[in-house]
Image (cartoon, rainbow over all chains, first blue to last red; front, side, top):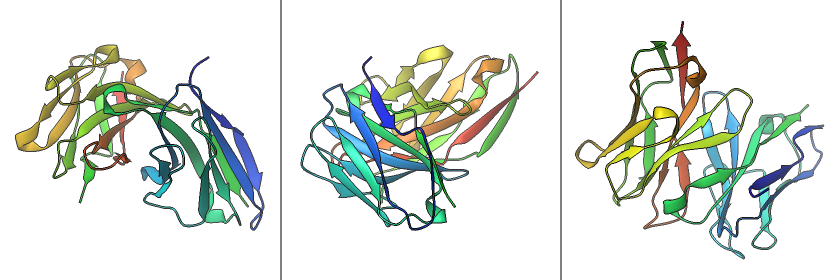
Length: 112
Length: 114
C-alpha cells in the first residue's frame, strides 16, 4: 500500500540511550519531514529534507540528527535521549503544494 | 516572519449546528494552506487545501474553507456538525515560493455536544 511507513510504533528508552526512528515513503516524493507532537503545542517541525541529499533544521532541532539516506528514506536519530523528548513523532512526505502531504501513523516515544 | 495562528484551542458545538474553526496566517508571499484532522490516537488526514486556485475550497466530509487575502484568514466551516467530527483540527501553512517548510498551527479541538 502506498504511503508513509514509520517504525517503530512504540518505544520506551532510558535517559541517555540512543535510537533511530525510521521513515520510508513509496510515493516518489521529494520532500520529507519529521515532527513532534506534544499536548497543546500542535506539531513542531524538527528537521526537513527538501530533496535527496539535503537537510535543514526546523523549529526544534536540538537533540536530534537526521539522515536522508535516499529519496525514499529519512531517519531521525536521538543520540542521548532525555525525558523532554517524550513525545509522539510523525514523519511526512510531499511533492509540492498542489498535492498536500502524507503523514505516517506516528511513533510514541517515552523516555524514562 | 511566517506563521499560522489558530484562534481557538477548543470549540464546542451541538450536533446539527454549524462549525467554524478559525485560522489566520502571516506571510510576505502567497501561501498554500491546508486543514488536517486528527482523530484520537490516530494519524493526520488531509481535509482540504488551498493552492492559489479557487478561494473557496471544498474538502471531505462536508467541510469547506475560504481563503481571504485581505483578512489573511483561512477559516474552516461545516454547515451541520456530526458526532464523528469530534477531533483535533490543524491549520497548516506552506510558503512554497520561499522554502519547502510546512508549519502547523497549535490545533483546535472540536467537541460535539449531543
